[in-house]
Length: 228
Image (cartoon, rainbow, N blue to C red):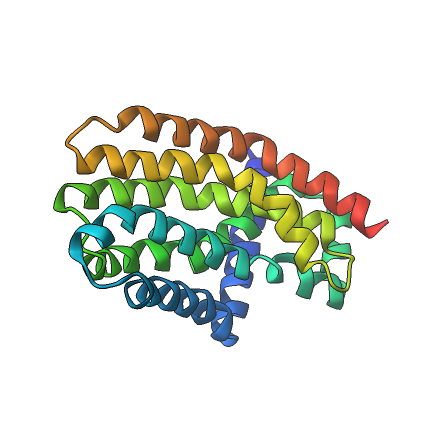
């Protein structure tokens, strides 16, 4: 019982620490959100203001923008800890490394994924997204964005020791993001035509469950390799 309490305390301590650091550096929170808003709002200027055209491409626009915004904020996930030595202390901690990295990924999702979920329905109005698709949009983002954070963290862990690992990071994680993108946009399209999209959500949910189980282990192993 005491060990369980200790694990829980360590998880929330690290989660609270990362959130407090991000609040002190507010650009870490607002930059991905502003990038998301700018990308979505620029599309009507580029492809025209026709509602039918915008409505058709809206799911892809929103999800691609969310994917890129998530990638934009990933590099800072372990970089600051690596530079100041906190990451090495985490690796030497008696607490399970998978639990510690899960806390950091959860903090990343709270700071990046949750704002995207809250803003996306407002931007969907700009893109004339079908009214039947709003629930599907929010549901796919709520289930899919944690997968983006978990899978992205694997790539960050592999490149944390590199000075310029941004391009390599993109090459590593973009292929992992493609299934989430496909099922999420397909679910929103199905909702637009009044079809059931529970199967699409189930696939994304399965990816989330698998990521929650396997990604922390892969992140921890990648960090040990990168820091040795």
